[in-house]
Amino acid sequence: IAGLISSSIYEVPSIAKIIRNYRNKKNIIPFTRQIDTLASEYPSKTNYLYLTYNGEHHDVSYYENNKSIVILGSGVYRIGSSVEFDWCCVSVLDFLKKEGYRSVIINYNPETVSTDFDVCDRLYFEELSLERVLDIIELENPEGTVISMGGQITNNLSLNLYKKKVKILGTSPINIDEVEDRYKFSKFLDKLDILQPKWKELSNISDVYIFIKLVGFPIIIRPSYVLSGAAMNIVFDKSNLDLCLKQAKTISHKYPIVITKFIENAKEIELDAVANNGKIIYDAISEHIEYAGVHSGDATLVYPPKNISLNTIKKIKNISKKISKRFNISGPFNIQFLYKKKKIQVIECNLRASRSFPFISKVSHFNMVELAMKVLLKYKKFYKKKYNFLTIDYVGVKSSQFSFSRLEGSDPILGVDMVSTGEVGCLGYTFNEALIKSML
Figure 1 (cartoon, rainbow, N blue to C red):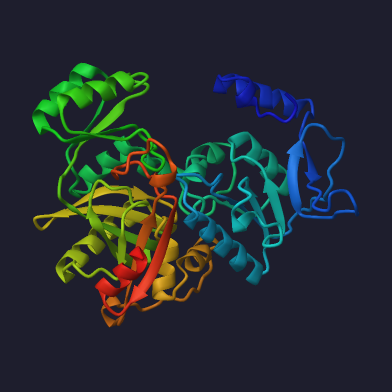
Figure 2: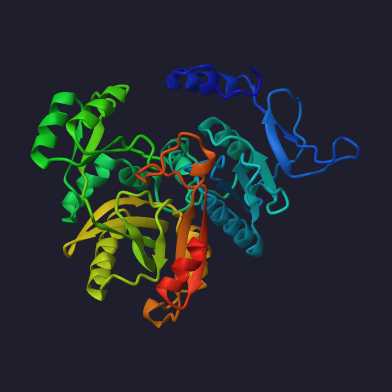
């Protein structure tokens, strides 16, 4: 079992914590080894690293006050975890190199550019678990850790890292938890008088039926902290509801579910932005071609938007300013909206770079990740681009690619679970031109 993290050996988190503390007290710690990239034919000195308990010394030296930044990557590439987050991580690495920082990335995906060991100063080819990330941070002693570029996996580590006194760059993990927890976030939206679909957190089945009788079908059933639509279901009738409740492992006060009224035939609009101490300094609004209910990673995205009125854009920006101020956002974030019959409602907010960050940055010729990093590193001056999408004489369309023909038994109907395996972004002088290019 050498090399396994405590939670892999002991399923109870509290026991895993005790074991980790005991190991540290007895100086039973993992050692850093270099990955041999030359098949042992020649001496190999690389910054391609991993941790193991089967060692007696580190293969690399560790320094104090070396102006280093740790970046948490996006994890393994699979359906539901997009390569867009890899672009964000690489943009961070390029920025840090340009600004004279040492870059240290933790990621375990050999297919990504961020795991090419020549794009950073040190690459740890390790899993993104709390224990392993803590091991590396304790060794590197960085100026700060970036968790907002790797997607939902790294965001879910934020609160536990904060409790371990790890310096997180950007938005406070306390605020991240308030937004990521669907129950907490919905409560705050109510206090801010921001519209959202009717919802309720429920801990027993009888209350589920009572609430559905009040709002009617269809509904969305989901837990808090959702990754790429995982564990979410759109339910259209009682038979489907019974099936979903039967499949649920448990519903209790400890493991409640959130039920939200699903709005049919509504347009979905996204806002990607960078804020500094609660004030938005750059934003971009895009629209989905498909109705709301299709995962944003599968939807066809249009930027600049072509079917949204200026009044609607103004309202979306005002709502976003309220949210940014309330959660004191510093860094990248994304908000998803519903629009139907002149009514704007908030679906969710993610206090991290979104899948649309790379596409928006490329179409607008403005790297939002670089701006976000200047905020994270507390630069006093950063370039604020005066941007007006009405002046752009072209349009960009991002279409998702699917592998249904190669996956036997797969369901080609799109929904809240992300199932795309790639995407194509194209430009055109008109919306139709860009859309046809992306589809072809």
